[in-house]
Length: 281
Image (cartoon, rainbow, N blue to C red; front, side):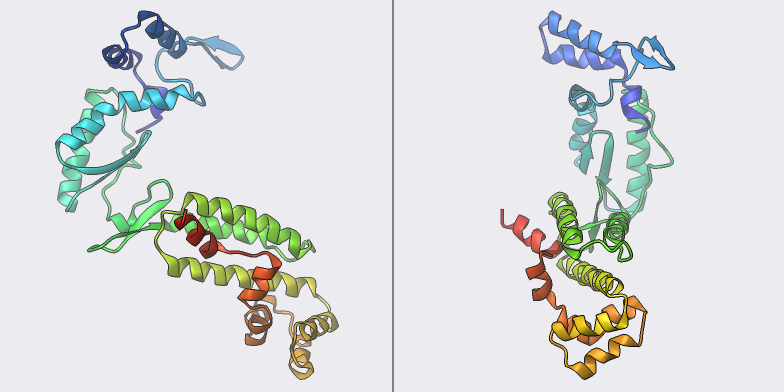
């Protein structure tokens, strides 16, 4: 729906509230809440439609108004998921998708007086859908996954947190990275793609190894550090010949010296670790 919270019709909403609330004083308070003035350009203007955004009452009122849509979809036997003004409806074919889309659009615009954003509303395969950051993979037994856009945003943020030229201590990076990953996995705990999370963890560890290589800028520093990590002297000397940081981070000897257990001791838990923890709670 297009600018949903700005388009809510007060009369339609109050009529639905009156069916459930018989206290006229409470109804009057809600009506005054909806019509409270708003500041625009230094002037207070009367609100003729819409609900105040940011208020905890607005999402509740929106669900009351859209309850008619939920009942309509239930009556027709559709599988759907709605969060506030975002809704996905699942059907068997593309033809059925276009038919349902047209019917729902007409219902929203005629019965509820809510304009539909036709640019964002579309009929696509579930594998190409994006709902609150989630999508699906597979047809016979679909599984929940993170959408492609979600993974792109996640990796972009990881790149920002794992820059190596800022000379920031690796312990500080790991602490900040752990907080972000823990919060991210808490939201996307429903995803069922363990292989993807294992690949992401491997990529993050490569980013961290690259950070250390950039901090060990001088060749003799890299050689000394790799010897301290347990590499033989002859193999450690190979690290003084390159300044291609990603190449050095991907070397077999680098992965062996800074393996998963080594990073776990330093404080890096990873996406898969928290996904498994949240799955058991």
